[in-house]
Image (cartoon, rainbow, N blue to C red; front, side, top):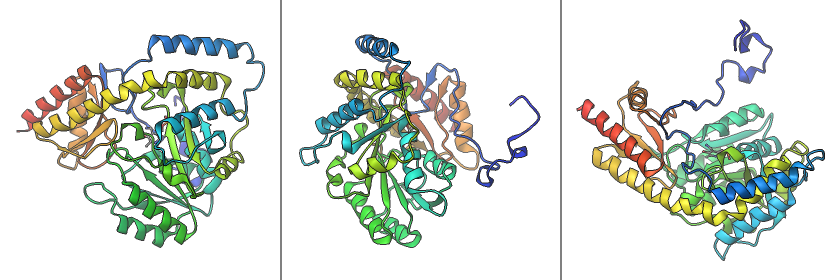
Length: 376
Ligand code: PMP
């Protein structure tokens, strides 16, 4: 801030001292491929439908919104039923909970199942907000192991769960920032290990699942009340600005998170906008195939240029390797000089690029081709 008092001059909680907030740079550059957004603006008919639905609720903004967002949760359950395999259990509003982005879903889950005296475990490198939200909710954090190629070795992962006996286990699939997916059998093995150890909750963060080649985890929900699948409209639906995340789980989990949610946490405007977006699911998801094709093109071209690339099931690609210390940071800066913003997630030697439009991806590929030539 502008003043002379700094955070650490304030009586902030011990665990927040010296820490940094989540901070992907929001820079004004021509090509922004750093936060795994969908590059396509919403289609005009959907913009119209949002305006219409928001106009309707605007008249009633003197009233609190539907506290339980039942219509929206029903529409989200319908979406999951329509896109999941036949073997998945039929979901209804009782199985689904929604909040302001999946970050808030995860926060509510940690407020419910974590907290002081409890521990959460995630396999890192992974989505940094899992550990940050753990800290914010007073939950201890344990960093579980990944193999050198960033995959999860089931035996090592199961051993970590048995050793630390966490109250909450995070599995991110496809994983951010590495891009690779976790096979369903591994998720199942981790769930079983977590039940033997405690029993504990297993939160599978599926923010990027629509971009995956893999099989759906929805069938695993049947008979597993400690399993939670976390989803978002920020990526595949191309609606990051909407702030709508949701979970699918046993109805008891949905009841439990209501113990910690703030009353009326989901505004009437958010609910109306999300409902309008869900009416246009097919249009929104049509970009998913295009983005998957562009993702595959990025993987192939990066390899041709001579970079190492981690296998990706997401709408982004992890590439490297840059000589450490300082190589990834230097490369990030050089790519930025060419008007392209990618992400340095702090994984030594690696950077991450989101799949953009074909033009944006071309600009990125030109930039890293130049970079490679300079390095030779
Ligand atoms: N989970 C993962 C793995 C993510 O990468 C992100 C966004 N970067 C989120 C959750 C949070 O997304 P949102 O709050 O927009 O739903």
